[in-house]
Image 1 (cartoon, rainbow, N blue to C red):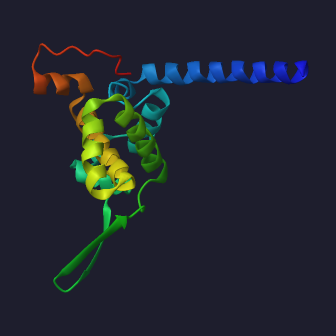
Image 2 (image 1 turned 120 degrees about the vertical axis):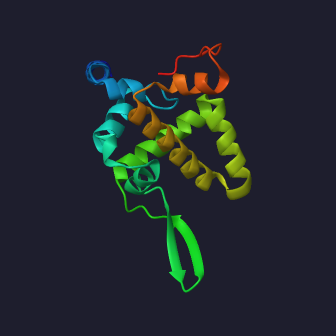
Length: 170
């Protein structure tokens, strides 16, 4: 039993060292630090999102970024009839996965994302609501990276300068 506890302790120490390296890599990059100001996005998520998106200038608008992530509905059309279906899943698999995971965290920790999620969930169900929240999160990511301003500044622009964040956004 003591041998297993020593092995477990060794593994936990390795995990702590890797976490420190990830945090250090994130702190070195301006874009990843900006991403951590968005609710639901931590150090690992910020690095993964930035590595998959890289230069935001590649995308002329946020809709192109949605498509790149595969978070757009499929469209079937015959004549004048247009049918939209499930998301295409033709985009970047890792980016889509991390956005959905971040959306779950954002819904739990941010009132704005929670209200959006709940509103969609009542009409469409929880799965479509979390995908819609991930797409909304991607809109915020696009704006933050394009303008090179932290997420808090967008809230202050909406609510006014008297707003001060009550929680740590990172």
